[in-house]
Image (cartoon, rainbow over all chains, first blue to last red; front, top):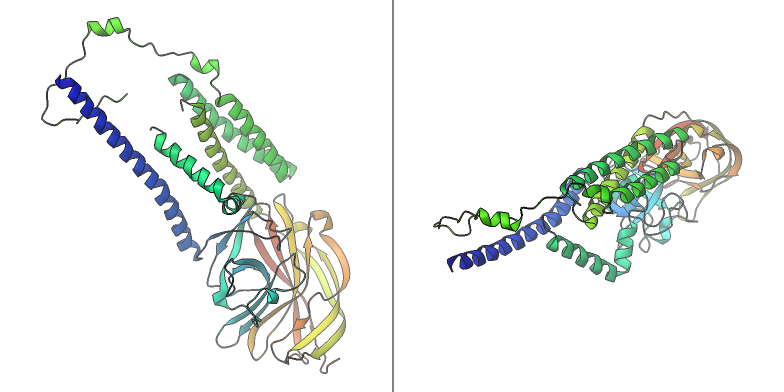
Length: 180
Length: 93
Length: 167
């Protein structure tokens, strides 16, 4: 009867091993995603290296759902660049084009005015009350690259959370049940 | 799908996708139409999926010949020597 | 690779990677496109030159613009955004760039044109240093691709002097 006990033992340890392997592989997926994100942050110098366009204010250049790659270099901001900026009191950053730049003689500080290509007027209405210019610290990065449509995934997921949970559940199930 | 079939399907998949990618780029670039490139590539991906995803009969020409059970009984499995360390080695399926 | 779902998964992943590569290569080939832009711009008339209520000076004018941007278009170009910046230096600011006119060119057929327009945005200063000032008119363009890297360039076109008195 010893071989039965032996067999049971081996089956049990096999299961533990398999569960552990699945957990490790799941962890690998999560951490590698994190590594890529943080690595991009280091390379681009921007706190969010990839942004999704949420509004149509830059149409026809950028449509809702397109993604932009940002870069934050030391170079001063110049007119014509497309920048992503945060306004005090607004959660969601805005992607618009710089139309006016004033750079100070001694300090090198910049005053910047932006406008959406598709908007009628400039962005002073979007800025905080009484704010006339954007300064360097409002700006999160300038757009350097572009890919269409990819951002729809995140738009759908933020607007329909059920789909997000379904997707995460399905992916988790797939990872856990799949055998190497 | 048998072992040889799996190997063939994977090879076919990779080669076809790369070939279609190159063809799509060359066609798109020479015509000067990004749209054409995307359409050619999408067509290529669909075709590749049709050829390599379903379990077509041509992937099952090399069935594995499992040992007959009666044959196996004639050659009994070597019993593992009772070792000090248990569960060290498993028969992976 | 022994189930259809697994094969489909592999196929979709590989196809997506290749798609990204295609877009990247298309964008890379754009880098070899040397564009030469020709254009002229002249200030036909200064319509308004005055001080705003907040003390900043403001200028509006009529412009005569003629451009040939055809060489900026490649197969991977979605549109070209072109604008005219008035650039000048003041005691306060080392750089002043004011966009006074912009235009979106949707395709190559519309990339060569001549137009007479009023300035779209007023030329403003931070303060009042504009009397008799030399203003450079610089054409900037921003090539927006269907995918990949965005390209920016500029070309100084002409310059003019503002009058010594308000109009």
